[in-house]
Image (tube, rainbow, N blue to C red; front, side, top):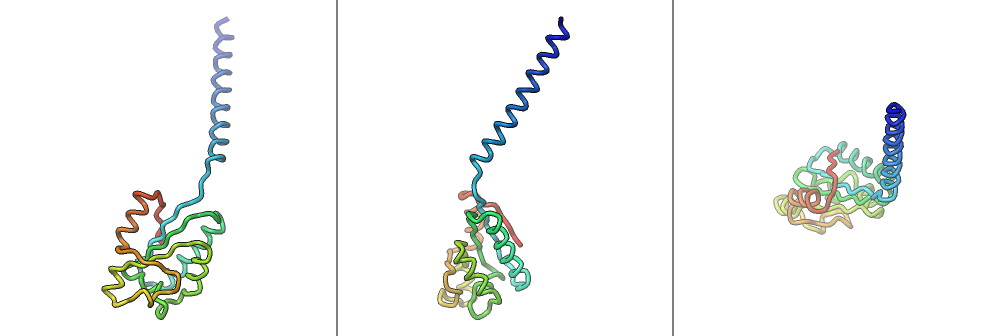
Length: 146
């Protein structure tokens, strides 16, 4: 008799595990959110910057509702300078797709760059480093550096 009770208990436990896993999968699908990605560009390498632009495009292909913010500062400021960038077309295309691209005003000031020198549509933030930290800590963005 006790072996029947043990088997019944095991069956109930197994059923409970199956039901709890099924329920959590359904809950995950219902609460799935779009990605929130912070892309950190603080390097001057044009090839690497271009690869970063391709990475962003691929993110948007997988999740068209993704919120993507690109922060450019230090050596990466050249990617958003209209006269220096090799990627103006890619930047404009990403902005048109809803990507927010910002330049660091500290870096701009240090390098004599004005807002008029930036690719149209690029915004500015007082500090690129602070923006990177703030977006992760307070806004829940995942960090990505190409």
